[in-house]
Structures are given as C-alpha cells and as structure tokens.
Length: 184
Image 1: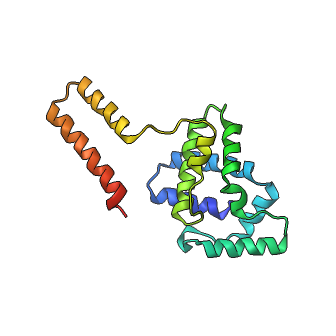
Image 2: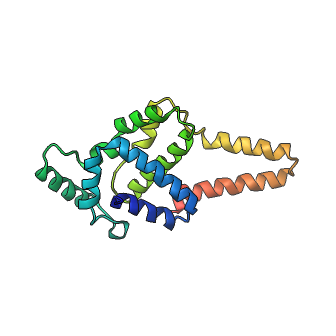
Image 3: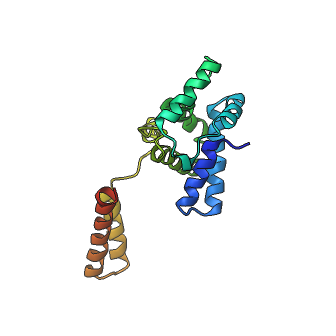
C-alpha cells in the first residue's frame, strides 16, 4: 500500500509535467528516504490512517496537526509525521548515509523536489533541505551572477555577436526578475 503523501507527491509531479521515468525515479528515491526515516510499522500505519490526506484536499497544517494528535492519543510514543520525515537532522543523517552512493546527486534532486512539494502543500512552513545539505558540506549552487557570467563566456567562445549575447543575458535577467517577483 502506498502512503497518501507519496501518491499526492506523484500527482504533484505529474501536474508539473515531469516524465514518467523521472517520476518513477523520484518515487523510488523518496521511498528509500521514508524507509530510512521511519520504522516500517509506522509507515504502514501512516498509509492506512492518513488516507484522508491528498493533494486535491489541499492538506493544511490543521489537518496534519489533527492527524498527529490522533496518532499521539492512540500511541503516545509514536512520532508525528513531520518529526522524522521533515526533520533537518534526520535529513542530514540521510545525506551522510547515502553520500557514497553512485546515485547521490539524483537522490539530492529527488528529495529537493519532495521538500518543495511539502512546502507548496503547506505540510511544512520552512524547507529544511538547504540547511541539511549545507551541514553535510555539500557545495551549494554558485550565485546566479556567476552562472550568467559562465554562460556569457560560453556564448563568446562560440563567437555569438555582442548584440545576441546582450539580448540573451537581458532575457535571462528578465526571466529571473519575473520568477522572483512577477510569478507570485
């Protein structure tokens, strides 16, 4: 049985037009993380009792908190959903556990997308992924301006005209401005 959060994540990825292969890989990676994060019996209980949580219901903090409260009433030693899955220390520990895996970069991409989903669905209020990744010493992406400069150098090396390069760089800056300000 698949946990509803996994099904909701799968639907969210489909709504973002990810390919079937990418979705399959992301779900495999997520299930590995969920297995690492919780005891098997807890995961089974999660999938059976959290069935009301789906993307179409737009899960909010009150629903999650009510579910967590009912879990704690039935079993006071049971961890809340977010206690392990969305815990920065747990995530850092997982990164350290998998850092020698040949698919490490894909795992990072998969989990980064999952935590973005959790943020979008209001399952979490802040994304622990960047801090957890930083605590492992994994290099973060360079600043956008550095990436743009590298792109400009690449265009110059390919002998693009100065006006074409200027137009491309301007388009990138406009897109970044739109993405940061205008898409809200």
